[in-house]
Image 1 (tube, rainbow, N blue to C red):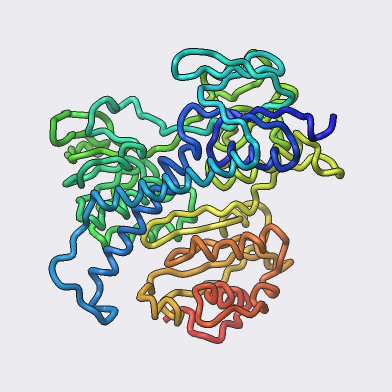
Image 2 (image 1 turned 180 degrees about the horizontal axis):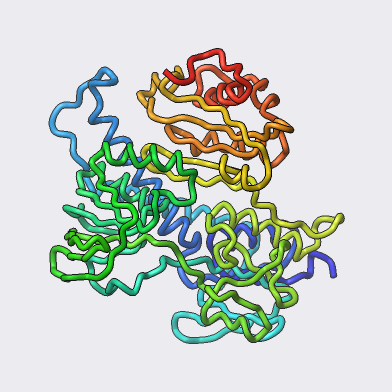
Length: 471
């Protein structure tokens, strides 16, 4: 069977699904993309993009308020215009969504609006909003239905003051106070945005650190920056019950016996897969106890010719992982690589928190490296000694590189500060390609730049940092 006459149906139009559809079409397949909601999925419409647009507004507001620091003054009171911030966010989302839709059209992808499900081997049923069902015959299926916010049973999500990330992106007015349940990436990004608008923020996290997936050292310093901003962070604390639902607030009882009230409560404790009602049993697609679709390293499910990518398979729940896996699934479905099937490799997946300050990491932390049998050595460079960050007025932060003492291989990095979500990719390339710290440090970095911190940290691994790293 040649690529040109292979039929592929992709269920889900998010960053995994639409990338899969575009890649398959460019390889000559006949592609149908099924989406019940908005093209772009959660990431573009209710996640990554709108939150970054709002965070950019908050950053601009912060810089305007610090005008005297930068040598200018703004007449009158500087205050947020929440409606315009939300309108700007929606404008960005709409433009990007229309761009993706145009790409799909240009590539010849057939887009069917409706809920897709498997209807037996080689068949996908699409239920439209009016209840009508269209059955599409196909050779291959790529499942890319993503995930949705996990809803703790403690809360009544029908109440307007109980929010998931979706509702937190669509408020009509700035709340007076906000209780955020969960101090992971999503909770921290919303805390960063709303605190800049003057909202009184309390964060409750049942674990012992903020950003539980990040290195403990970074998390501790990150927590310090939030507390300096007036954000109340309560660790090792759970919401036990709701004491009162009122029109203008909700009161909850915490595990330490205290009570706290807030205008709104944002529940951000993770996500769950959109795997229910997809007809997985009609073709023998297995799911694990949490509902994630089981796949192998080639993203094949337990059913022939059916692949699952992104959040749905429970690997790493990030948009960029979904897009990466989309390319692998398509290449395997169409046998693009003459050398054989491609296996996914998530070792160099960057993790990024777009708060203020930003946090980013990739590869192994120092503790993980030791657990994996390496002899880890580290090098650190602080932003307070970096010319570019001084000029920017962003001196909070640092870079730590983790390497193997025996081989000098770059194993990973953890960093906090301005633009670390951009410079983390240099370390991702090093990890992915087995580069050494010496190779990284000997690479000429532009001066002045934030990326110089990586070069200096690499030199520090060998005790050769010529600039002051720890003022």
